[in-house]
Length: 460
Image (cartoon, rainbow, N blue to C red):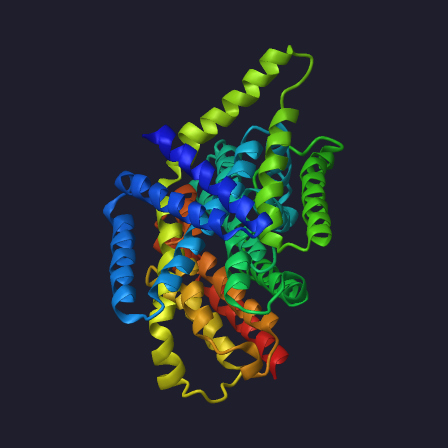
């Protein structure tokens, strides 16, 4: 059963990539059908909280059938979105798999985690940011284990708790800054998908400022409120030239950007279509390079084949909780938006002009919904299509993207239901609720106010 699930997830990815590159609606339809089969196989493997999302998806499907004259097209779009989310998730998972076997990545993480106290927060924020570009929230898992290793020998429990909290928050806040600008994040991909006329290149300058505001806010709060009466423990300094351990990661990121940017410019395809092809191929090449020569050809082939088989048979099915949540969130968001659109556009908006300052409300809606357990994929795919066209608000579509990704980043920092706070809570020995609302509450409020001010400046 697990092997079949993994194979179908892989088939969904291949079909969706082929559909994106060929613009073939038949392939897109088959990919959606296979994604439905994947969801059916994954659902029995998850808990009742995740199965609830499947139940909601089925209920909305029945409602759409009864209420929408174009129910077939709407359900088709929702299934296509579900297949896309599946394929994009699997593509990113290949990169995490390749990074897991890289000794260079571990050396790079150890170098950043072993910086002196005066530079540690900035180093870990930068490291969390760079690693998240490759590993997504897997960067928190990697750095969390490195934090545990570096603090294992610390005998003073107070110092250990303080350093654990500060280091984990630096890593997490480095991660959430990527959500505002990096094209390999779900935040950027889904926001671009629901805002007609938006482009990553157009939104990038505004989003980079948002990333800076998020990073600077975290550093400022850590500097202002760090303990003053704690003597730092002795530290084994990094060896001379250890900074070179950063070069493999930087080289990988530059190669990834060059490949994606070059292919996009050559083919004219949207960024996400190029990413879904380039990332798995680059990951396979990275895995191959991890096998050091000399070695017989058959041993090399067997080693690569073993990694791929393990990925398909074991790792992909193990993502069942995340996949069920993400697939259902993408599906539910499209259907719910279509069902609510007549009420919102005719009843609440009345077809009139809407102030662009409503985007500040959108920015705050996403993290507030996150406190209630709503995944950002669901909230963004729900609220994005409900907004009037950007021209009706007198703003660029790229500013709507800025509002959505900024809200997504605040959700990643504050919602106890996100993977980021679950991981931070696990490594910090606290509940996700405490990690999100107590540890990150002031940060979320201050960063949210700064992002709101930046957005207000742009739209007025």
